[in-house]
Amino acid sequence: MKPAFYWLAILLSGALFGAGLTLSTMIHPEAIFAFLLFENFGLLLVLGSATGLALLAYQLGPKMFSTPWLAQAYKTRPSETTKRTLIGAALFGVGWGISGVCPGPAVAGLGAGNWPLLYALIGMLAGAYVQGRWFGKNKD
Image (cartoon, rainbow, N blue to C red; front, side, top):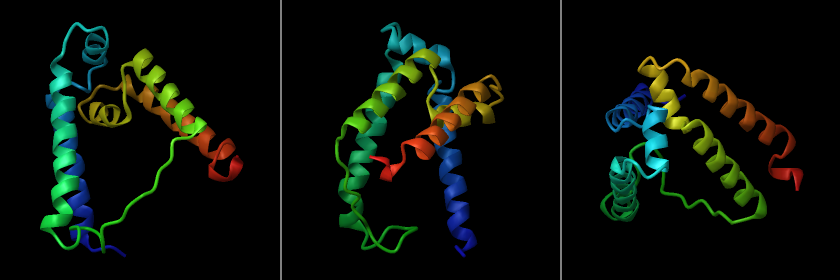
């Protein structure tokens, strides 16, 4: 069983992430549509900031700390680009473009009272279930 600090840190991290998504207007599909239609480039600043911060954290974290805060050790996760990965990424992008909703902002939007996002979240969960059930890791 993980200590209470572990779960509190996860809760606070999620709340901070949700607050950032809310402040950046990413919880509003209209803002996503405006970005995808090249009408509003404000989300490009959000994307660039998030990418830069993540890059900095991944580069400096292991050099500054001997172990992560909430894990035993730093780990690498090998990945490969396969046909299934590319198809999944394309489906994700099409779904995002059609709905204007991404999983993180959808959950944050529910927290902000944007209840129609529940439909998109149900669709995402159904898609994840179908992928895992019929196209799981050992199904190739």
